Amino acid sequence: MTKNIDWRGSSLKDLRNFPVDVKKRAGYELELIQQGLPPTQWKSVNDWGAGVVEIKMDAFAGTFRVVYIAKFEDAIYILHCFAKKTQQTSLTDIAIIKTRYAEIVRERERRQNEREH
Image (cartoon, rainbow, N blue to C red; front, side, top):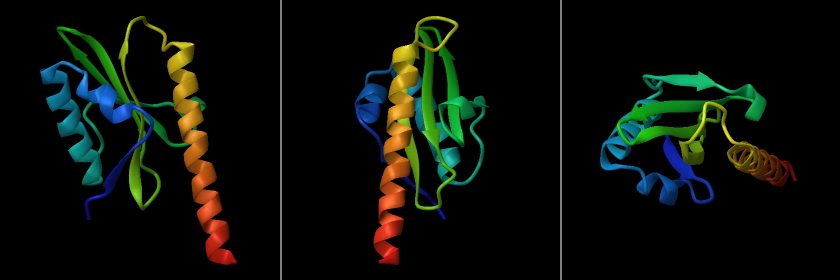
C-alpha cells in the first residue's frame, strides 16, 4: 500500500525551490518511502523527534535535505526541506523540525482522544 504524503508548513514550497536534479532525486526518494522502502542515503535523527529521518542529497548546486517521519501508518509527514549551508544543521532548521514534529504528535493525540470519547 502506498502511503500518502503530508507536507508540513512550507516544506513543499521549499522543495519546489530546489534545483531540478535535486527535486527529481527527492521525488524518487519519497516514492521509495511511500512503498515502504528506505531512501538511498539517509540518517536517523532521534534528537529531533522519535523516528525522524533525514534524506541526504548532495548535488553540484549544494547540499540538500528532506526531513520526514514515516513511523505512523496513515501518512509520511514531511517536516522540512532545506539547503544545508554548513557541516552542522542550523539551529533554525532544527527548531522548525522539532516544532512541526510536536504539532503532529499533538494532532494525533487529539484525534485519538476524540475517538475514545
